[in-house]
Image 1 (cartoon, helix red, strand yellow):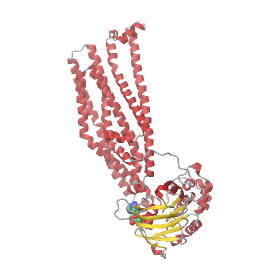
Image 2 (cartoon, protein in one colour):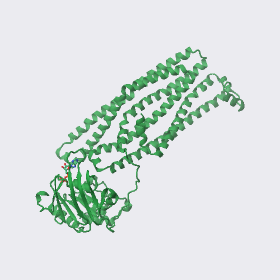
Image 3 (cartoon, protein in one colour):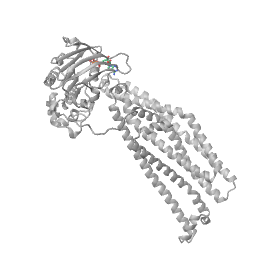
Image 4 (cartoon, rainbow, N blue to C red):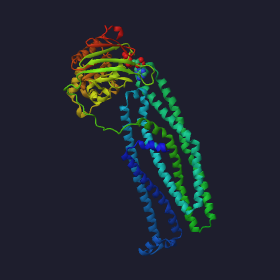
Length: 588
Ligand SMILES: Nc1ncnc2c1ncn2[C@@H]1O[C@H](COP(=O)(O)OP(=O)(O)OP(=O)(O)O)[C@@H](O)[C@H]1O
């Protein structure tokens, strides 16, 4: 319990905790209002059954005597109006309270899902190598809402209901202590037995549900992601079956949890009927006067009327909290050790070619790298220096470690041993400068379902994009003529993952994207392999024009791509096999 509260609180910042505390006080007032609504039943019924009793209540007698009431009947109308006003006030307050509660909860939900999304984007690349994106998608879009709308709201409502129940029971205790104590013992024991029995089962169901939801998202993603291959080979049913296997277990779990939420209702109802009957017997045996018996019974019936849904809710809130606890764990684990949320403002962007930031060289010193959970080193003691302004090519058989080495130079993977220096400074220590000055063209380009302009000026605010620079980059990537021929030109939407473009056009958008920011160092990881020989030659010609202005680091399988490089480094099994080899087609 303490751990759960700590975990929950760690998701909120100081200011938000203050708001939560405020909400807690509002909750206490709400519970008092609820109790007041029930508590005033006793004097009200007492006055109706015995109007003369107003003379025994000092406050009412004062009003009756001093405000010119001529008959008890007109005074009873006033009392009824007061009674109604208290109820209206109570319900208005509850409306405001619920508004404040939902406002805080849903604002926090948005904040936390943003924080989680941001933290995933900023996690080291190795984190993403080890986690399935379906689980991350599930955490942001399903677990965070579940955490707030099911876990936290249930916790809030549980506290409110508990407070209401305690206040009502305290009120009952004042009127009829013996009957109330009997009721408390019976009710407490019933709730305890119920939970003792189903506690573990509920938590296990919650955990399984979370894992299965991730699996279902994974199968949908995989099925839709491989749409073309699936249609060609007619394997749709394989994916549908895999999806529905998980779905069936989810459906059966949902049925079980709904049943567990329902079971307490008839059970508690029976217990409460027994309690009311016992209470009546106790009251009758206590030899009270008729009016007292009627008003006490009215109080008990009203209390039972309010307590029954309250206790039902307490039980279903306890089930919901337990069932949705895994959502808290998932979000907490992924946000653990995250610092404060950073500003949503994009870092300033400049693609103006000015004075060079890097002037000397890029040096790799004794780099060793091992992928997480792997035994063998993928990169083994690699050292070399690339003078700034040079064009260097990495060649070697598939799996030799070229991409891994480039990922290390990009700062995506942190070496187990050794360091990458640019102009003598470790890249770790100049991260933001490097992000501005490095361009990277990967093997396959990720395109957003957006315009060509926004895909070239990727992740840059609209007001910072210059169309001339977009055209310049498209020109360098040999795509200007094509884009000019389109009716919407730069405003053309490329479709999801660029489906409205050819493979070569997609790749060229990626090249234009890297060139748009005028990088000083350009990494190309088989960037032109999807292009036909003619287009590749043209692009390489354009890239060759950048020689001297930019440092070019190229991984390529085609001889033609690297023929103008200053240095060719041949890799084999994670090591440098030779430098400037007589490149044969077989090694590339
Ligand atoms: N995330 C990973 N986890 C474990 N091993 C990996 C991972 N990524 C790559 N490897 C392994 O590291 C080795 C080097 O892979 P890398 O992608 O660097 O080779 P490459 O030379 O770029 O190959 P290619 O030319 O085919 O792209 C391979 O044996 C590969 O199986």
